Amino acid sequence: MSETAPFSSNLHFCPLCGSVLPLPTLDSDIIPCSRCPFKRNIREHDEVVEKFVLHFNAPKKKKSDTSQEMDATGVNEFNGPTVERICPKCNHDTMIYTTRQTRSADEGQTVFYTCVNCKFQDIEYS
Image (cartoon, rainbow, N blue to C red; front, side, top):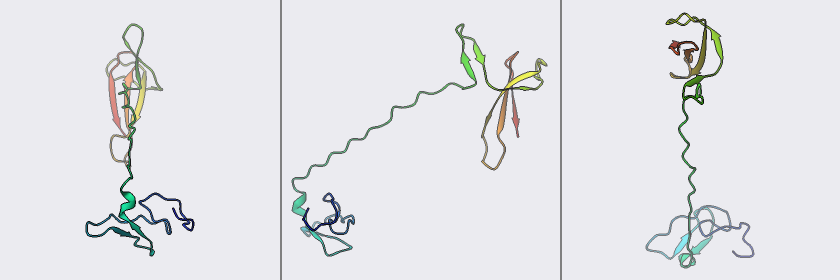
């Protein structure tokens, strides 16, 4: 970088105005800046080695349904908010519910109910 250059940049950027320099052409050894009079000799790139390392996040483990957890005996133990709602299968008066947005955003959520007694699942499209 020259002493008068206002930008500290790598070879892909103009040191005078900071613009991205265009890709070099096969018929010229000069890379002209498209915004100012700066010109870079392509031979400045001869000894440059660029390395890129991509770090990917570890894949997330697939979660089981958050409303169900296994207890020590291996039986599903349902937990979550409860509501007074009659189960259509066993007539128990308490059900656990979860909500999900299964349709477009301007429509209501879908409510999934699970009976705490018989584990019957009911759906309400609101």
